[in-house]
Image 1 (tube, rainbow, N blue to C red):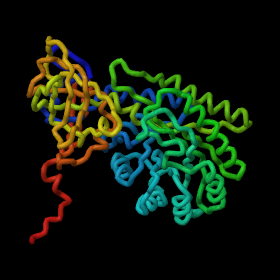
Image 2: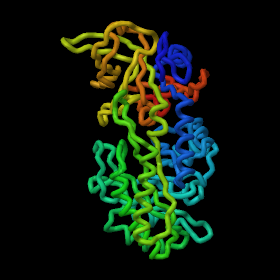
Image 3: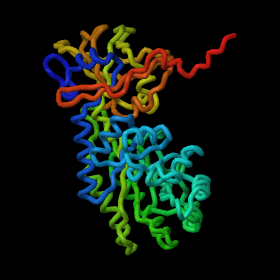
Length: 420
């Protein structure tokens, strides 16, 4: 988002225009920023020989999936709903990978039917279920997800590696899984997968994990598996504070490639194809949530701005203290700044952010909350039976609706209303 004389603009479109066209709360995605992020990852992947799959869990709807695939990236999905979204967008199976630590029978059937190019297997029960569905005539390409034991420095709620994490095979059980996969007709053991968590800002955890992953890859190859892929996951950090930590992605990817190269070189192995799965780092900075201020009040030394959004459309601050920087969006102001607690309208103490805003902030003002593209709309709920917001694309001075706002009737659509 960019501040202009008469307020804030997103993708060259005034925030007021977007709010008038689609209402609030609204998630506005700057497609200029989005396309640049996708293009950067596609170019870096080609330059460094790294496969890039967008992590659909960060945000996924049909037009977004179509745009990301058109930019040259694959997509990883972790549910039937995400798979259906990618399929409706026309993404071919070869560019889809299925994740998830508790895949349903329906999802396992979809994998066996060839609707994804490969699957990341999380545990032995899942591997056995896939083996029962596979045959030499209908092979299934799998990566075994390994919990490398590396616990990266991040919030516990977004940590996916280490002994406290539920994800992946442990280092003690991975050899049994390798032997089973190699012995199973129709299972093609394509390699190893490791994911450490989200919001990581340095290469050290990836380097630590690389040695364990390469050791596992070597054991796969020694057992007779092709094992040509090594996926280090994603989790590349994005700090929403204007003066926050910034990640040098180019250096990080080069460091990851060097770390893997050093490990395979030390073991005299052929270099695997490295894979990454960025989500937040592609879509977070492209997203801005627009809210209408409903009330401004003072309680002692505290000033509150209550907006028409809530924990229902952005649970991240409540879940793990995420920060989204706010800005007055619909007009300019010369007033001094004062600290406000921006809250939603749900029946919770749903503090969205505490930050300085113009002291003349008033009911009716439009407020923008930045770096909102990842894990906001994708985690939205109907808490308090609020309808989910609309999503719009804005870029090069133009805008269009890409996800409709839920109607009141949508909130009731699944209720079984039987007469007494």
